[in-house]
Image 1 (spheres, rainbow, N blue to C red):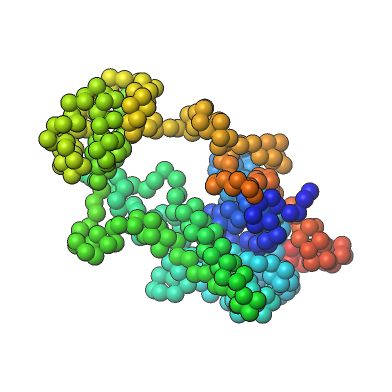
Image 2 (image 1 turned 30 degrees about the vertical axis):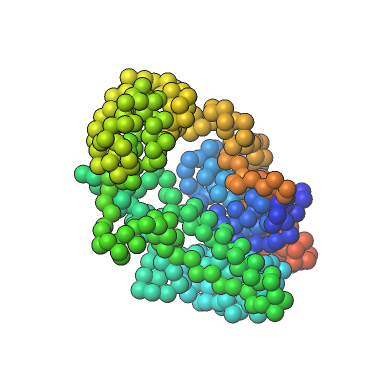
Length: 402
């Protein structure tokens, strides 16, 4: 088994002591592009994500994707021996990813200054729900919490209905992406100077959610407006809704420019709409969105999803089918690009999951394997990296340190 990954981050070593999704995903993004990521879990317990459904033969399929491409060791950081072993690993690593509640590592004697004594150039990513300081620093950082308090949930759902969460805890992977970017930004700065100290990154997942709903803050600040739910309608273009087709599937329509509206109008055989004064520009179309939704919705309801897609693509229109996962697997574009790719797996031989995003031309990454069982790579971590012999490893194992 090659210890060196394939991709632009080959040679970088990351210690992942985070749990569940956001922190581990930040580390996984780095593993995808060649970093050697060592995930350390509590002995005998492991990361809670290992128990998340969906399950196959009592194995979490979620786990296999979120932690793909990593090496798996165990270590009890709460013990003195565990602390010492961790600091030895830190001395040989570039990054630590953690998501404990603020103050936890400090209580264990593993504050950032201690980590920097072991490795002055270390980059430490600290993910929490609300950040390392502030009145909410001790609050739990579950996805629904920071999606709700970050402003995303309030604008999701029908205008006359309750706020809605998305069908997936999207706040976690968004936080992971912010985390991966932050690590690389910090590493770039550290790499510029031999004298430069490492970096401590304070990533609030609530603030990450707030950041992605870009215009809401300035809209309120400058106009005093509080964005409200509008269902599937787009507040800055029309027509823009989700429409039911004749075969009981759904499509969505987008486009705010004159050209896209013209192409969409031609797709439904209504070129006359292009010069209609009610729809002459984007602001007029938004003002008359109800009428446009009626016109487009009626046409789409009389056609199958495939017929609607074919008609709009023929004119350069901007309609898309709303895919379920089985349709994504079957789509010829995704098949051609190998968007869903087979990955080696220790339990099921091979599993299929999302491929690398984005794609590098000259130095592509690689998904080396699906996430493995607890402590699978302890021998590599402690024997090959730290140079412990078999008796030392067995001693630590007997004491519950690893």
